[in-house]
Image 1 (cartoon, rainbow, N blue to C red):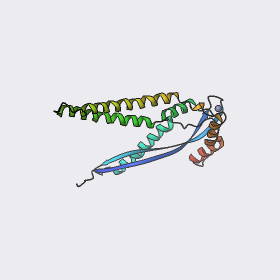
Image 2: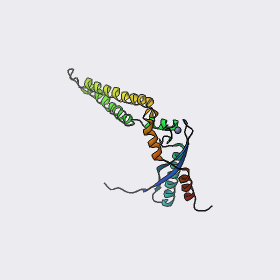
Image 3: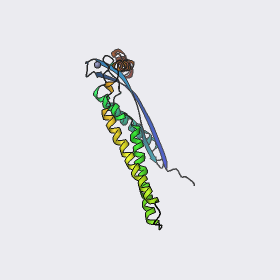
Image 4: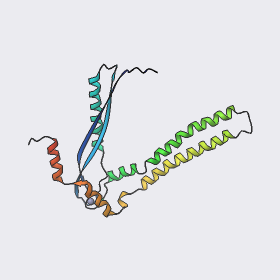
Length: 198
Ligand SMILES: [Zn+2]
């Protein structure tokens, strides 16, 4: 097979490290940490007619994507004084809690569809009344649906029950101290980023 290129795809990567300031909901202590994020954007130059424009679009899309992430995202950094994970951090940790179970559940559900289709095809095509393969396939497909949805529901319940603030406060404080940086470091960083003027 001969492949004829019909254009060029450009991908741009944007990477930022932004300072975050947090006021602890529990003890009112103010602390700071650095959040690193990376996003990609792409642009296509159809028939190679707009390579520069496509490259620029890719960069703009990557910049837009990173802008949105930076505006809304946070890292789970507990308070270095009392160890408290703030409400938004808890929400984020809950969303990510055993997330792989969602994927396994989805794979099982997706696999159920062709299994049902195969069962249907067998029951239509089979002329032997003794042939139980269609029924067996229906049992397999139903089990896939039950297991898949069970995993997804179970994950949702586990996630909702998960309380990061229930773990050892000493350990949480240590995590917070490891990630937080001083106000002076933040200011120094901002000065460096906005150029040396002023
Ligand atoms: Zn605190």
